[in-house]
Image (cartoon, rainbow, N blue to C red):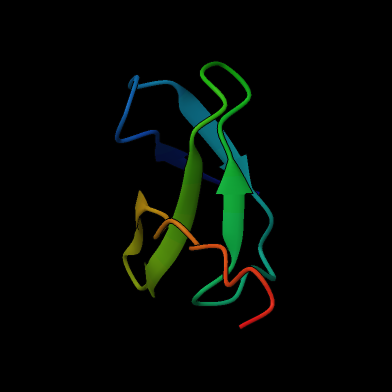
Length: 56
């Protein structure tokens, strides 16, 4: 199990060893969605917000 720091609140997040780039993690302290951007070293950033398409 790896650990990484939440970029929003600084909490330590436990990350499974089999995590993949692009995977979304949720900080258990602040609820922020984080995207795994790099695997070596393990790096996360704020996940992009998905826009509603409203069926268009």
